[in-house]
Image (cartoon, rainbow, N blue to C red; front, side, top):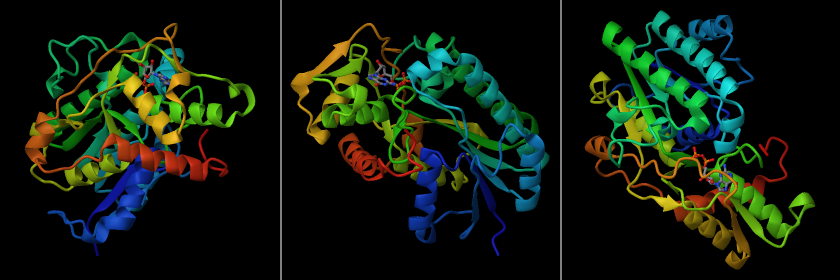
Length: 333
Ligand code: GDP
C-alpha cells in the first residue's frame, strides 16, 4: 500500500481537471523517485468550502494527507480583478491560511502551491523577471487584491520552510488556458473570453449579433501563455522531484515564447475561421500590464528537455473542447 496520500485542492478548475486527466492517462507510467503508486485525492468546492477550516481539518485527518497540491483560488481576468479587489484578497487569504496551517498541523512536509506571474511588479528592474523580483515593488493596481493574497501565500510558504524545515514549493505559471477554463463572457481571462465572444459573433446569437468583433484594449499588451495540460505535467514533475526543495522554493513556469494580444486574437480568428478584417480594437478598455515577461532559467535548470505545447496546438485543442462542450450543463460560461 502506498505511503503517500496527495490532496489536490481546486480540482474542479481547469488545472485540477487537467491533473485528473493526467493521472488517469499517465500515472501508471509516471516515474517518480519517492513513491511508485501514490494515492491522489481530488478535492472540489462541493466536497469542502476551503474557508471552513473545521471541515477541511476533518478531510486532512480522514485522508491522512502527506503531500498537498494547492490550486484552489478565487480567480478572474483583468476586468473581474479590477471590480472585486476586496473579495479577491479576503477569500484567497482565508483559503491559503487554512490550507497552509492544516499542512503544518498534519505534518505535511512537501507541497506545491500555485501562484501566478500576474502578481509580479509591473515595472521590474529588468525583463525577463527572475523569481526573486516577486516582492520588489507593488503589483499592478488592477489586481492588487489577488496579487497581494498570492504574495502572502509565497511569504507563508517561505517562512514555514525556514522555520519548520518544510519543502513548500511555489510555482508561478504565466497566463493559463485550456479545456475546463472559465469561459464567462465578462469575468474570464483573455483566451477563453475571446474564444467565447468571437464564437458568438460568428454564429450571431443574441446581443453579440454584430458585424465586427471588438477586442478590449489596444491589443498591444504582451503575454506568455501556458497550456493547462503542460502545467499539470510540470506540477507532477516538481512534486515528485526531490532535488527541488526549499532552496528553490519559487519557480516560474513558462516557455520562451511571448505574444501580443493582437497575435492571439488572430490565431483564434484563424481557428474559428473568423475574418480578421472584421476585428476592431477598443482602446477605451485598459490593457492592464503592458508587459510582464518572466524568466524560465530556473525551470530550465531542472527540466532542460521539457517541450512546451505550442500555443497554436493548445488553442486548437481548447477551441475543439469549447465547441464540443458548449451546450453541456456543467460548462462554465
Ligand atoms: P492579465 O494577463 O492578468 O492582465 O489578464 P487577462 O487574461 O484578462 O488578459 C488581459 C489582456 O487581454 C489585456 O491586455 C486586455 O486588454 C486583453 N483583452 C482583450 N480582449 C479581452 C477580453 O475579452 N477579455 C479579457 N479578460 N482580456 C482581454
